[in-house]
Length: 169
Image 1 (cartoon, rainbow, N blue to C red):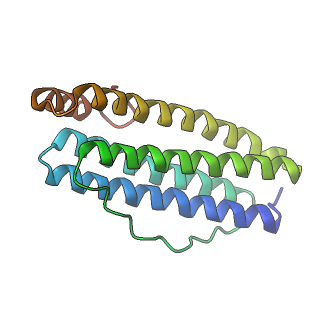
Image 2: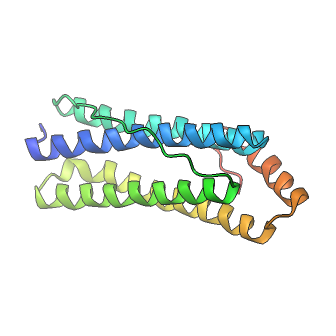
């Protein structure tokens, strides 16, 4: 069943947001690499890759439904600031924005009677709960660590152990 114009536009906006998320995570990776925290930088790069994968899932859904998604303008990401805490706070804020957008898309699909979208959007809602939880836990650890250099290096090593598709917290 082809998406109506309203849903097709909303999906294109979500695709754009997912790509913007990928770019934002890449910028955060650059900042953390610059701070000599290669493990955290690697964690952010993997997040960047996952956001591109999310965009691809949405693109596939839209094209499978007989529509052609349109990627919108991607704004340049803002610098997170000079601290690791600021970088992960920026990541959490971005995840919350994506979560809100997916929930709005779910509500729109319900309002439009598009039950074919609901399995995909339900998967993304679960994914976003996990994403927000993971970043929140990292932030909690950063608050516990404070300015403790060895603690920060330990967290860097822990986050650097992440492989694609696996989230060590």
